[in-house]
Image (cartoon, rainbow over all chains, first blue to last red; front, top):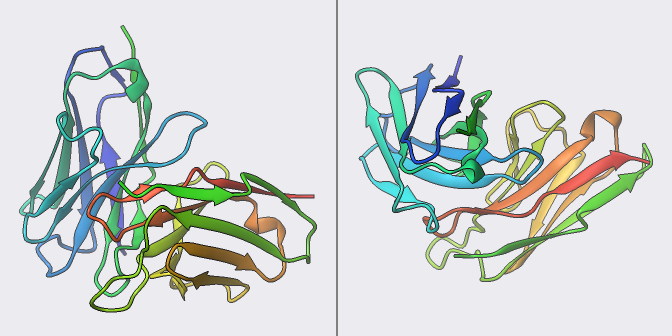
Length: 121
Length: 113
């Protein structure tokens, strides 16, 4: 069974660095054409795509957030890590990771349940 | 970045009736080399994570009922539900994946009339 599970701090102070981990199960990011994206959703608002990492370690970022985001993978641990520097209360959101598997374009076919992050002093 | 614009933002539909959601992109989503439309549809049901409905413009994802269909042209995309059911309530998002920076529409809230 393919699953993704997000983890990280529930509360972060403004200006701190947020580190989120996505633990993969049932598939490997070392498989050709496998990819993982991060997406977030502020309370009551729309989805916002943040970043993507591919099996070959190519990385892509949201234009508006690219100076603050870093995505990485640890294939041996089956994890994808997203760091966001200098967080602000507007970064309060539920953060999701999702798989992009070969054969469906870039459709994100399996999503985690999300982890809620609040940025507040 | 490509801007995605959905309409309507809210759509009340009577059970058994059809529903249609429109999504327009600021640039063509047709891939020059493979002729595919890089447009996906997702639904986020209340209290749940989003789930993939349609990929590459009009292909249903695994397990999606055939009452859902997608149509595509260069910049205009439509998600249709042939007969609304109570379980279809949720917020529907289109997303373009032609560019390496993906972008979502604002979402359309589909509800029971």
